Length: 99
Image 1 (cartoon, helix red, strand yellow):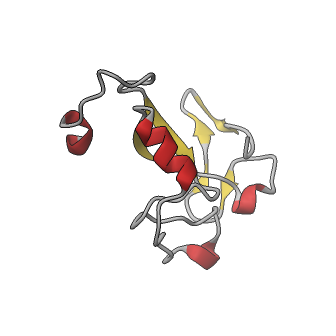
Image 2: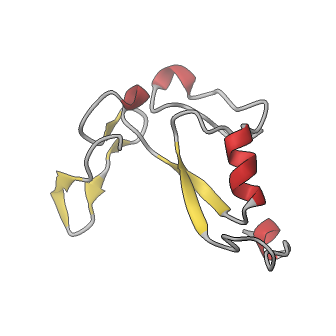
C-alpha cells in the first residue's frame, strides 16, 4: 500500500482501484503462488505475469491474493492451506467455489 500511495494514477483508467488476484496462476515476482495446494506452500514466483503487469499499468492496486480450493477444482471454498472460507455473518455456510 505504501508503494501505491507514492504512485501517480491520474492518467490511468482504473486509477487506485483496489483488487485481489485469485491464487490460480496470476503471479507476481517474489510473492507466494500456491493454487490452493500444499504442494506449493513454499513456492514464490520468479517473474510477474504479463496479465498482472497490465493490471498495474491500468492503475489497479493489487492488495493481495484470494484463496482458492486446490487447483480451483472444487465447488466449495475448502482450502487445504487455510481451511474453509466461511461467510462472516453465518459461519456454518461457505463463500462458494473457485469462481
